[in-house]
Amino acid sequence: MTNEDKRIWGIHTRNDDLFLNNKVVAIGWRELGNLSEIDNNRNAFKKKYIQVFSDDTKGRVSVVAGMLYRFCHEVQIGDYVVFPSKSNREVNIGVIDGNYVYDPNQIEYVQTRKVKWLKHLPRTAFSQGALYEIGSAMTFFEVKNYADEFLAALNNTKKTIEGSDYEDDTVAATTEEIIENTKDFILKELSRNLKGYALEEFIANLLQAMGYRTKVSQQGGDSGIDIIAYKDELPPRIAVQVKSQDSDIKETVIQSLKGAMMPGDYGLFVTLSNYTKNAQQFLKANPIIRGINGTELVDLILKYYSSLEEKYKKMIPLKMVYIPVVEKD
Image (cartoon, rainbow, N blue to C red; front, side, top):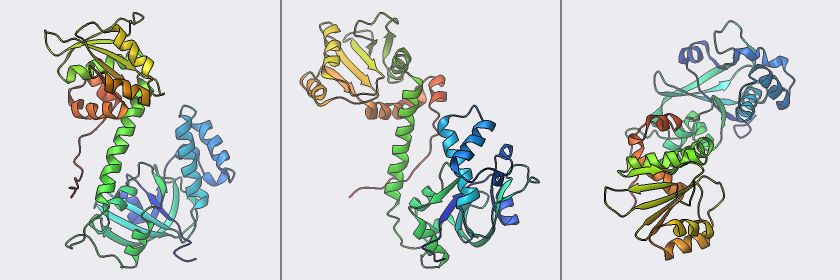
């Protein structure tokens, strides 16, 4: 089997010592028992998983059952495995040295495979893109985008970044991917948790975080205005309409907001989606109404996140971190 034929797998664990000292890679889900006793097909793994974890979502069933199936049946002796250990901040590269074995003596990681560790390298030996790929949220996954980089590290054909003049051109792409993934997460959580009146309450709180005084209209009393906002005690009044629909907002919908506005009012239209071309043209022709789409809304949430009510922070759990900034020429 040539290197081109071998697959490269990535894996995470909370027990670095088990992997490094026992020379194994392993995953959990003890409740499923011996995976080799399940029929050798993905549907059988899904069926078994649903029997044991009946409360899990369909999405999680598909992801975890597929991961378990791959670990048991798709991984081949001779395949490579990449394991980033947290205890020493190293990237460990090895080769799968045995078939799947169920080890009931383990407390947690009972689904095991023997591995022969070949290299233990500092994280600085790899590009930011490669590190981001093996930082996958999944426990077990296939490494694809940066597979060549890990193979090169085994063959000593790549100079480490540390102490060299190497310029990591993956930083910009990785940074952008992290930002976009965060924005996608926020929009998905808003769409999943906040519909109708609940989204209106959230937008009112976001406006409060931005320094506005707000009043949400009563449920069932929709006159085209969902929220009234003031910057201070004096005019102008801002009439806000909020829509949680997935489809793009049409011109006629924005016209209804304009029709409900009083002389001297400014308008604000907020949507999780976007606006049709005609709606965008209408907004451009009526500058007293500002339209905010899903992307712009997420930008505001990130900017004022720290001032949101705690219940919304729990709904959209974010942690402040620092990521590289690549200056553009």
